[in-house]
Image 1 (cartoon, helix red, strand yellow):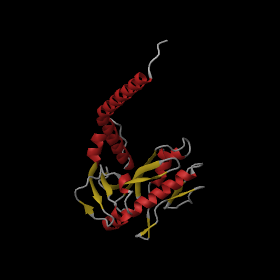
Image 2: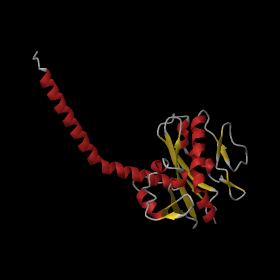
Image 3: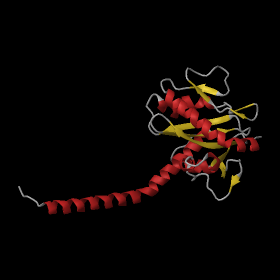
Image 4: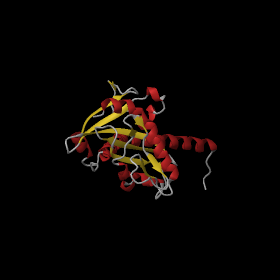
Length: 234
């Protein structure tokens, strides 16, 4: 068996590390456009899902252009801010800012019945990582039209149920205001919401922490839109 000097082994290892790093960097650079496109398509699918429009990766871009007729960014006072793109605005980055300095994306969907739905993005914390979603509202800026939620690593069969239609559909028709301008959000009740509760839905059985994380996400994200909702309700 041939013996190699320590110097040879060191140089060989260093060369291999550099070569592998170059290969990985090249692969990452070549794949980035495809990854960015996939992220864009998935985001458009989620926004469409929040207004109850089903899509696939193949038709999401076309349907988004058809149904999402406008988008813009507002500030904490509900005023439109020029020069910012609602679609590319980084929600995670905005949440690192003080609440009064955050920029808030708004997407407007044209529905089949001729009315509009207003979509707000959401981001919060679950049990094992971030959770996020989109919630759409009728022109009264109070009644939920649709909702979609997703997660990074919640427990399958428990917290991961937030990504299922059976959990999301009960949000439809719920309201976030009481007495016109009192923001109450939507509560996620362990053991089930009371019958007729227009501000509450059932929590996930066995997924209490994720459910409460989602409730906190709704409260902390939607209250920032209160000025915009009140000023623009119909």
